[in-house]
Image (tube, rainbow, N blue to C red):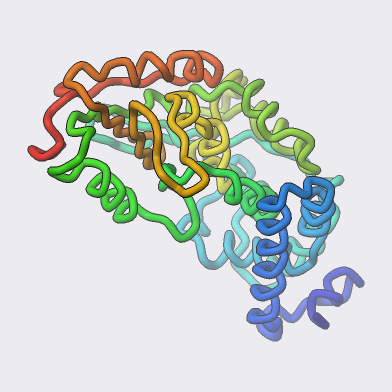
Length: 318
């Protein structure tokens, strides 16, 4: 890829002349190779491909374009009050990000967005940090996509809320053996994730130290810096993926599994979309599903909050 090579040589990058189809194809092929290696359990090959992705010029170009041109928050600055708007600035940023070892993590800028009950804190990283997070996400996400449970639908490529609705319908239709449902959400999912458990789950990922720095970078509010001992900034590019990594294993915690033929076995059926959870059970008193998730909740520093009407018959809606 000629234009990607120009970035590494220090030449001036003609942003408009880049072959973007080739850039996206290169990143897609690497992601697919990572996914296949993870599915096959070849961890050594996975780590090699992840290191290749992290230093791939196409990954740099794709990440910078996504953050500075495609994403909705492209005009939103972090604590440094810097936004990247011109082709020249994007080219300079690409050259800078080719050496991740030199990247310095910044704290996020804390803002609040309105919600039904009060306000929700949002942490906005700098443009440079968001670009690096997009690069790291391309290296980490395919590995976990090959391992995530099928009952997880939020913040995943190729999946959406309608897929979760269809799954609930299939499990809770009128002739089902699990007609009672516990509709719950995970209290402060982004804010209360334990860093120790999350870093342990990530393992020896090549960019593990960068992720640890993002977790501990803290936030700035009204010109004051505050440390973060738990949680991930809700506003970071990689934060939804880290949430899914932290919550991976909920189905196993409930004792549910699938036979080699794909038949579901277990007392409870679970459907999760981000921090919203539906646990379907045989009996009206299905609170045991929440109790079974207790050890996992204590490990990851999250808590399940029951709905006000926790066990309506599923055919009435919930």
